[in-house]
Every structure is written in C-alpha cells, then in structure tokens.
Length: 618
Image (cartoon, rainbow, N blue to C red; front, side, top):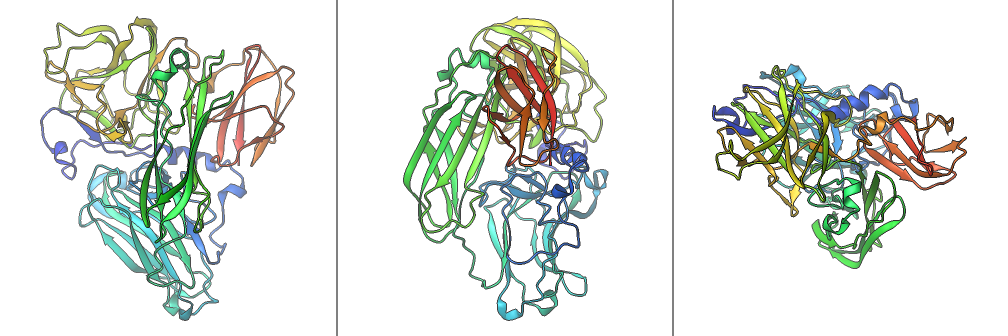
C-alpha cells in the first residue's frame, strides 16, 4: 500500500533511535494503490474522470467513503491526495475513510522525505457548492467524524494539525476549525456552522489540510461521514443510519488463503467457525435489525447465517458473531475462490444510507498459503544488524515448495545489499543455540529486492527446482549486512481474533531464534505443489481460440461472444493478480462496484482450455 524508509529518524519511536539490534516496523513512503490508480486514470473516460473545477453542487452534500474507491469520488471532490481505504482506521462510523498522511496525490512522500521540513501535506477539497439561495437563518451546518493516528504506529506531535477551511466570496480560504496533534482515540464528531454571509455565495468550497514534518506516511488523520445541509443545528449530531464497520474476515484460519488442492483434502480444519461483525449505529436510539452473512464458491452457496431482531446500542458500535457453518464444495480445477458478504437489513427506525449496509471480501484459492490480507499498513525488517527471519507454515500434506511471493516496500535509502531467500525444514526452539539444530534445505541469493508497480504487488521468487518438505516448514531470508529489507507488514492481522504478533514469525541476530514482538504479519507466501497459477496475469491459452468481450471499454457490464465450447469458469482479475469477480454463465456480467481500470478476464472451458483477454472498466 505505501512505503519508503529512512535510517536516521530521531522523530520516530524509541526503537528507531537505539543502536541495539532488533526487528522493527518501517515507515511507508509509497502508496502503491494511489500510484497504480492514478497512472491508469488518464486512460479512463470523462465519465469517470469526474466533474471539472467549474461544476457546481447543491445541498445536501454527503460522503462516507464506503465505496472504497482508492481516491475520493471525483463527482464530489476536486483533488486526489487522500487515500480512501478500510484498513487504517479503528472503529470508524461506517465502512471506509479518507486518510490524510505525508504522501502526495501520486503516492510519493512530500519533500522527498526531509525531517527538517514542516509544511502542508494532503488536502481534500469539495467541488464548489452553490449557497447563494441561502441566508444565515437557513442554519447550514457541516459535520464530520475524525480520528488521529488509527493503525499508523507513529503518534502525532502537538505541532501536527488537521485544519478545516471555508472559501469565502472574496476567493480566500478562512480557517474555521483546527485540531492539534492528539493521541489516538475514538472517532469524534465536529460541527461547524456555515452562517457568515461571506460564505453564502455561488462557489462556496470547504477543504481539510494536514500539516506535519515531511517524513512520509508516519502520521495519519482519518475523516468519515461528511454531511452538509440546511435546517440543522449544533445538536444535530446524530443520524438515522446504521453501517457495517469492516470488511468480512477471511473464511479461513489461521491462514487467509490456502492452496485449493490442500484445502479440499480437509476443509474443516481451516474453515472459520464464527465471524465477528462490527455494526455502527449513528442514531440516539437503539435500533432493531437483521444481520446476515453468506458465502459462495464457483458452484453454489457454501454457508449462510442470519440473526433477526437484533438490538443495536444507541450511538456506538456493537459486536455480533455469526456462525454460517461453511461447507466447501470440491471441483476438479487447481483453483477456486470464496466470496463472503456481510449485510444489514430489516432496520427499524430509519436507514438514511444504504451503500454502507453491506461489505464484501473475495478470497482466491490458488497454490500458496498466506497469513496476510494483501494490504501493507507498514514494513518490517531487522534494524542495526545482520541476521535471519523465519516464517513458519503448517501444511495439510507434505508437498513441494516452488518459490516465494514477497511484497517488498520501497526504501528512501536504497537497499544496496542482496538477500538470500531460505527454506528450513526445522529451526531451533526459541532462545536455543540454533547452529546445530536448524535444517536449512535450500537457499538462493536473489540480489536486491524487486518492487512491483501494481496494487500491493507481490514478486515471485522461483526456486531453481521444487523442494520437497514435510508438513511443517519455514521460509525467510538471511542478510549478511545491516540494512532494512522492508518486507510489507499487514497490521490488520489477528490471531484468535486478537491483534498480536504472528506466533509463527521469528528472527535471529545473535545465534538463537526469538519470537517476533512486532504486531502484524509479514507479506510472504510460499508457493506449493503445481506451478499453476504462478501469475494469473501471465496465463497463456491452452488452445488458440477467438472470442469477443464487448463493450470494451465497459461501464456497468460486459458480454461474451464467439466461444464454441462449454464454459466452466469465468474470473476477473485486477492487475495485481487478485481475483475480483467470478461469474456464473449469463447473458450479461455485472461490473457494478468495481474501481475503473484495466482488468484481466480469464475463462476456462470444460475441456481444460484457458483463455484470457484484457478488459478496461470506465
């Protein structure tokens, strides 16, 4: 998601300042999602590119960022520097927030990372709003929720700030609200009147700006549930709305993804039995509603659960647990997927915003194990020492390891030393001299880290040959010099639904393995068994066939034509190789809810042929 690192931070946590060898978080100095998205936006139609600066809105104005569109909705907002996501906030009022940090609209650190420079960072600016028909008696208010820090590990300093400004009729920006750097806390609501006659003009705008040292994505603010309308008052701080707070959990544990050929041998050992779901109620009264979830694979629904007549506490977040009794169905192919949806319905007492009533996660099952969710909130490495890192996996069956997918984050100080990727059958117990116990069965010098330019892109490091291992093994690396390898780190990782270090991660800098003390999990994935699919975007058709995808570019849906064989599977991948949709055979295939950009459509026929075409979504 973002990154680069520096080696001299006096402004970071105390663990950054000591010369003691240790594992550490690494600050992010790139936002790969923003870079990828904006690089492709020039190819998109004017429909997506949004309103121009001359387009004017009318009241009411509302956005809760629940579309998770990477950049702000261009029909409401002028600029693109904030990051729309569901990963950084803690208990937001609804799914998705706008995150302010030290990375610009192209995902790069402001000022090329200079801890001596303090200045303006991200900006979120509304399109002009016509307020000329109104007068002060119409009681216009702007409200929003905000949170400092969230899951970012760097506390804000008192000198940091988030500022709200209004543009008056003289074309001047006037500061109307400021929050200095504060400690992490729950989301709070701010309420601002728009009553001064200098604001009641045809081109009124409002914007937020954060100020900080130019040290990349270390300090964060999160904005949610922006609402501006007439007929409000200072006490109008509550809404007849209920919302899902987070994306659904992966249906598997302790892994988020499991090789399909392993999973179908014993699915019960990996399937999550219960799903925690957080629901926000923004009303002052308790509400009654139904919460449900469902899961399906390419063949059918594989489980569902529903709780009717549930009660929500007033003005807060309630936790619910659903047990859908999942049952994985087998298919003859090398991969599968599971789509999990959580949903609110039957809400009594009012439900003003429907778009935040559901959330969806699609999990691909291919030929690798993963603990991470595919999104890096920070980076990981060993500081001030050479050493090794080991990452344990327990497979369903003994198998061959073919390589390792790794998501590397990018460092401000370029890595100038190479890594050796390792495969251990056994490592010594923690705090035990390791040299005589470790069983290193494969090691490969891979040179400098490879950074990908796709959304949270993973690079595949292939082994020279398949290495057979027993069920339990370790992957990792060894560095013979003191530098930060900066592997992506997923801070949303939980173990038994608690945020904590992955108990399968270890590091070794003094001749013995030490359990990781860093909360989260590394973005490293072992490739097992057959080599398909190494990269879904590079799959070649098994047979030469011509078929047509139309319209292309597409907007809301597409059609297929020209296939003379029976189709068994239709999957749509983004350019990082992650499955986004899987379809049953139909006359039309919906693209609703997908972010515009370039995708890969992959089709399998019943005789095993694999066909693919690129599809652009506008």
